[in-house]
Amino acid sequence: MYKYFKPKPIIFPLQGEEGFELRKKAVEFVEKVKVKGAEAGNEQEQTYGILAQMVIRKMLCMSLEPDEDQSKGFDILLPSGVRVDVKCRGGTKPFQEKYVGSGDLEREAKHNF
Image 1: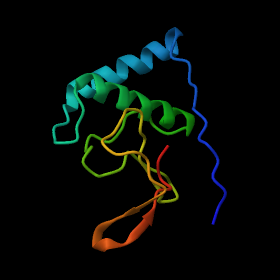
Image 2: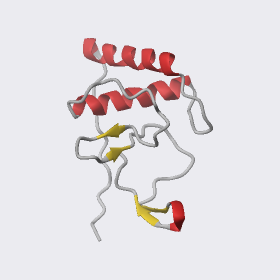
Image 3: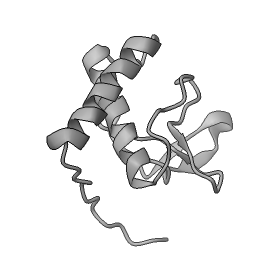
Image 4: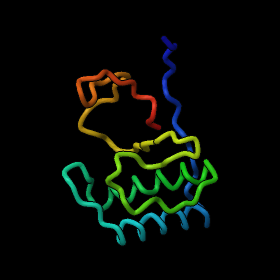
């Protein structure tokens, strides 16, 4: 078993020209895609979510624009094949180190930022 460390926030300044461009791209992306569904947030929440994805993508030196298919269940596919789900708003459940997945199999939550 591993030792638990309290998560540290990733702080990325969004002021200045670079921050403005990221915020602008996030708004444009949400206006273009308009994600629908039971768990989809409102337009403002979706914009924050896409902005968070763009910040992480920038930090990982990936293309900024997320895939338009936002129904895959993950946000970023790393070159190693690891799927990353970026979270930045409150969900309906608290974060769980382990959870019961499909087929009643216990799974570890290692993929969330």
